[in-house]
Amino acid sequence: MMSRFPLGPSLAALLVLAFLGLFLIFPVGTVFHSAFVNSDGSFTLGHFSAFFDQPLMKESFINSLYVAVMSSVFAAIIAVPLAYFTVRFEFRGALLIQTLGVLPLIMPPFVGAVALQLIFGRSGSVNLLLDEWFGVSIPIMDGLNGVIFVESLHYFPFILMNLTVALRNIDGAMEEAAMNLGTRGWRLFSRVIFPLALPGFVAGTSLVFVKVFDDLGTPLVLGTTNMLAPQAYLRITQVGLEDPMGYVISVIMIAFSILALYMSARMLKNRDYSTTQKGGTAIQRRRLRPVESMLAYGWIVLVLLLTLSPHIGVLLLSFAKVWSFAPLPDAYTLAHYETVFADSSNMIGNTLLYCGLAAGIDVVLGTAIAYLILRTRLPARQWLDWAASAALAIPGIVLAIGFLRTFKGVEIPFTDTLVTSSWIIIVIAYAVRRLPYALRACMAALQQLNVSLEEAAESLGAGKLSTIRRIVIPLMAGGILAGFVTSFITAAVELSATIMLVSRESQAPMSYGIYLYMQSVAGRGPGAALGVLAVIAVAAGTYASHLLVERTAARLRATRAQEHES
Image (tube, rainbow, N blue to C red; front, side, top):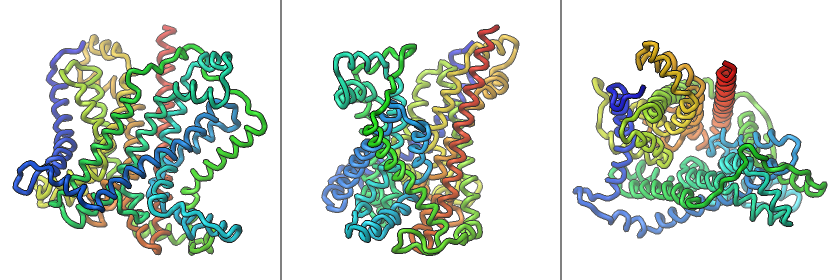
């Protein structure tokens, strides 16, 4: 049975709170404090007035909002038809189409940005062919348009995945009733189907907005610095940690991230989107007429070509000996991969080390928090979930700035090494940023584990720790491993925090190495090769994560079937 204030869970809760307080709440609080105080420690709003008085800062603020909004709009334009066609109509290869539609998420957007420049830039493959055939060119990769294009292609899967699930959960009786009343086509979609799927759409769109608003790597790679994230990076790295403008930008970025998530929840508040689909009929698929089928497949092929273009471009660039002012490389070579393995093997090792340690920390914390929330009666235990999940709203660059400010001059105990110059701070940043992903996986795994199994073990004389070690952890293994893999693969492509916290090249992981290589034309080949290796690692991790989840679900179904039989 669960006691009210047991010593073990109380100590575990204190340790978790200490970690979150030291490495999340306190650094972010330091950022806020630095934005609102003068050099003498007195309170002021003058830094914010100075921010809006500077033309560059106002321009960066407007540009970031514009890019985030337009990226969300174009991501929706791509994702909504793709989700609707594959769920609502009979399509050959619908599952393959949806799988390919998620591929952009396994490539860091700043890597895809370079490939898209080579394909869609002014001297890229598409514009060279358009100029040769029709005498025209499309400035799709110029300035802010390039950032919007890259971000839209990279993040639209967030809308696609959420909307697909929402569409599948719609009660088919709703659609049938509307059709019996004469509603067809666009009116059926806009008045019945889409409103019922609105929660999934809003959830995906808010994620796109937050991700784009906070992104640092893509604008930097494309040379667009008149946005908030690049300005925060440049102010801290060029002016210094004492410059208040970097902290003001950080506070604005946090505020808008939280505002976007709040507005998405507010938009759905007090509205009923529930249906009677559970146990009823799902939304009915229907056949398209030949002309409709041709148009739908045309749109899907166009979207998939755009979706796969960054991957194709990076792959070609990784083998390209020369690729300049030509639709395709003039010659191919393996020299870039040789360069990567010869000069950057430590980056691959660093990535495995940092991401492995961070993912390990995440599953330990995630398991502990999940157990404390679901299996104890500690007061205010729900705050642990909220505190850990708050990392979703904190941009990587803001967390890194908070670390640099908070731990400035602090040495690691029993050493002469500064915390801010050690690779350990990179691991902690990864762990804090990815903790919500591992926590969700661990919570889901523990929720599927019936408490009666633990009670049975304790009734037979097993202690609480023994029950957790021998019953709970093994039965949660699938969820824990899925959380580990998810944290690992998402940390492997982290650039925003990495670029701020790497103090010397020997500490650099793959994401930082790709960024360094991409800064020069000569280094883009090795950078693309390193990017291909990163994509392979992330893809393998994603596949392993799905495999683990499926096996865990199958094992749980088998266990439940045995319980019913007995």
